Image (cartoon, rainbow, N blue to C red; front, side):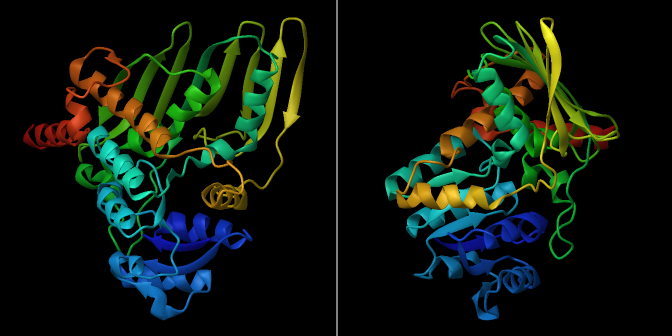
Length: 365
């Protein structure tokens, strides 16, 4: 499958391209970035001729040899790129979140359906060994029914943007759509629902906001019909934790000492219960954020070889929905119901108005 890369920042340079190059089912044919030197750099890494590196993604979309567009630009720019790619008949795989509001997400999903193209989302943590192992152990009944989960990443850091663009764009509400919640919260929410194997019914949240208006600490509680999911994340100082509590046992991830992010490499997965010894499953070393398998599965799913890829527009929308409901909970000072109703402020506008208001208040004080 022939890929065109739109947005050539650090994640593309360090993770997307190396994984794509290791897949026998991917051929990178063009790159595009508003910073031309980034497009040229990505082209060199990918082995693409320099004349296939564009400063305008629309030139890339005009190419007949691009089957699918991989979008990794700042979140606020993604909806227009997705619309244009769908109109050009290109399949799309996009970094999360693929929109800043649920209204925009619904529009993107509808546009891709109308054009007959695939809209896939990079929920790459679904491919991590530890999460696959945990879901298998749960399915086998090793810990009984899941009654609680805790995902903690209080020592995370925001990735800086490439110096050729705007290194601090994650701190700009209008570009990022949010702070730590939109950065890593999205990952934590789809993983929480994965472990519970059912949708959350509401979320209540508290957040701390920095001077730029974006949230840098977020503490969330998701309510399920008969279970609870805790998500505590921050661009700050703290530890990593991933715990799954069941009626007959528990699963606990073992991180290196000092790890501050739940997405950090896991050394082992421990399974314990009152009825037997604790079992330790060692996790193979050398994990990368993206693997060739992601792109193998995506290519096979689009070409009809097998249905293997695991996250598309609706799954990306769901993770975004929980994040935006958390912002709504902060605004209301009360739990926010899931699913988010169309009349809810964050449905139409996302979290940007809330964050801009917070920024204005901080500057006025």
